[in-house]
Image (cartoon, rainbow, N blue to C red):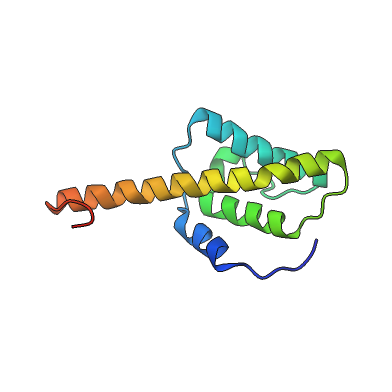
Length: 118
């Protein structure tokens, strides 16, 4: 693995993700967790030993996936395939994190009697 300095966008994605689970669709959940399993298997890694994928906090998961994206160097075809799916998994987690954040802001604004952005 190579060393890296996180970019501001990566730091923000990690900070935006909640410490708990996110409401992924079944399709998104399968994509993200199969990506995690494929990276672990092809590179011989254990990102979250002893934890079921659904028990992994979203913030920890996106942090780990970003770190692997920036530090792993794929050599085999299986590694290249797994590595190539990391950006999609990262974007899915970030997109759902943004959606959850926006929903919370709407609920807060509605409970205060204001419309969002007003």
